[in-house]
Image 1: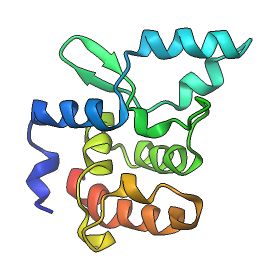
Image 2: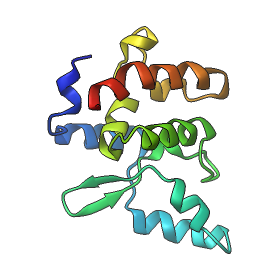
Image 3: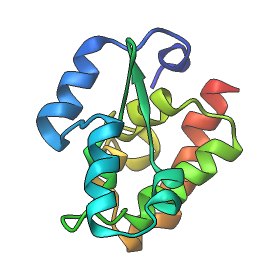
Image 4: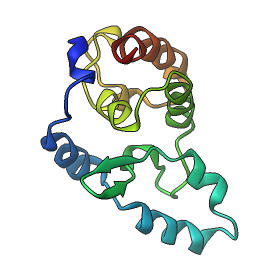
Length: 132
């Protein structure tokens, strides 16, 4: 994975890929859905991966479970990315890009509990160094 990938503008096709495969609702849509199911959606809203495209703020669907709860592995990865000062958009790019540290698999395809530690290590060995 070339290091400059995380220093260059993200190609618009990436957002189309995420939208088509996982959904990419606007933050306002996610907020509305969460408000229906929770008296206080703020704790969940603070944990969301948000991407900034043109003038809009969107939430990649790969972070949601079918019941709209957040995937715990993605939340842990995103928290670590924020500690490492990885920009939101580059975190989303990393999630859907084949990763050498994962044998060429995409992190998004490994977002189940048993892969959490491996994903955290891959985040540190690839993405954190690339944006440092």
